[in-house]
Image 1 (cartoon, rainbow, N blue to C red):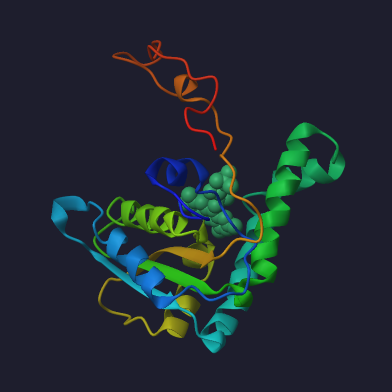
Image 2 (tube, helix red, strand yellow):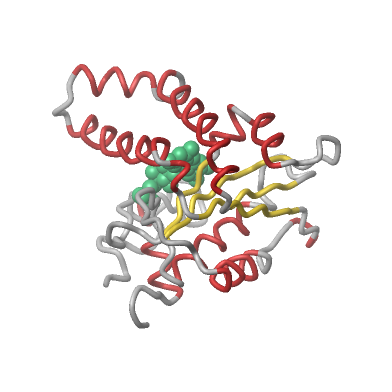
Amino acid sequence: MTGDQADIWESLYTTRAMRRMRPDPVPIDVQARILDAAIRAPSGGDSQPWRFLLVDDADVKARLAAPYRESIALLWRGHYADQVAAAAADPEAPASQRFLKLQSSVQYLADHFEEVPLLLFAFSRNDRDGGSIFPAVWSAMLAARAQGVGSALTNVLDIFRPDTTRAVLGVPPDRGWQLKATVAMGYPKGRWGVAARQPAHAVTYRNTWGADAGFTVDQPLWSP
Ligand SMILES: Cc1cc2nc3c(=O)[nH]c(=O)nc-3n(C[C@H](O)[C@H](O)[C@H](O)COP(=O)(O)O)c2cc1C
């Protein structure tokens, strides 16, 4: 592949949460490819119970920035309160360092929400666990990566500010559409990297829970 474009393997390995983005707009044909790939994804009974809403209007983004920042503030005070306290108590501990890095990246996106070039809102209905929308969302993120566009999946607006978000976006109130994900998209400021994760063999069993997977993967099987 040339430039920042990526094939399927590179996309699978390097689609990270990309929260620091350049202001350059994402061209409309690139957006079309992202959505056209997304709607190929599976859904229960092929119901395709989705609607996607793209936002690149400065005024709409600005109206969502405060709710997004409030949501992230609630996240630090709620779900992540223990980690925030632990990191403050012992900032040099490896776990604190990892958390502080994540927190800084998450907060950066919140602080610059109105500068994100493109927001993709994914809605579904009759889809309580999101199983019929997240494959499409992830396909959109992979298709973005394949074209050199970074993305960050977020769900705080649907958790903490669903009504405000729906009102700003003009979502009809009575048709069952639920916001499931907000994906920030834009060309990255930084470089693409392979996500560090627990290795596949550590989280995979074969035939019986807890039994050896039958393979060991000590290093990623794709590298740049
Ligand atoms: C369901 C879900 C919700 C997420 N919500 C947020 C969010 O609200 N804000 C954010 O900045 N990142 C959010 N993320 C991104 C994760 O923090 C990210 O995928 C994880 O830290 C791994 O990052 P990496 O791929 O760069 O290693 C979310 C991811 C998922 C799958």
